[in-house]
Amino acid sequence: MKTTFICPVCGYSKLDTAPLVYKTNNKTHYSYTNGAPTFTICSCCGTEFGYDDDECSWEDLRAKWIKKGAIWQHKRNEPKKWDFRKQLLNIAKIKKEVDKEHTKTKEHSIKIERLLEDYYKKIITIDQLEESLLAYGINKTIPKELQSLCLEIITEIDGDLTDQCTNEKKKHPIKRLGKEELISFQKKLKKY
Ligand SMILES: [Zn+2]
Image (cartoon, rainbow, N blue to C red; front, side, top):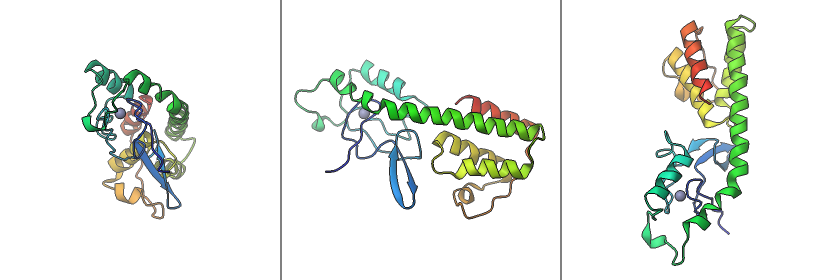
């Protein structure tokens, strides 16, 4: 039987993929808060994951969808007797996974923030910071927000290294971070 996924916005249970995807040992894993966007589109609420939820939370998208009348995006897929309230109950089934991932994100943020502070206070060296940041930045199990933040800080400091950073085998040189860069990174982290 084909695996399907629940839409975290409207509860539709037949999404082909979850909103996010990552790979380990050539295995594909779908996730709700971990990995790169799949750009899958929900045929019920019409959310395009990776685009619509880029700056809008699933809760807000859900509220908007309901406010507009909980209308099917692809009408022809709409079941005859359909109740959006019933469908929304599906979201409870993925809540645990979503919450677990959010906790992980928070833990990572706190750890990275501590590393940056340690570096700033000269408790750890730039090499140790580089090693740790890259461990976070290219580790596939790290939540996508932090991945992009790490890539961002590396990219900002040392030109466009994004492609290299996704390749674990390469060595990535990082220049010494300036005070302002550290502060701005910490500020960004605080948002998570
Ligand atoms: Zn949906």
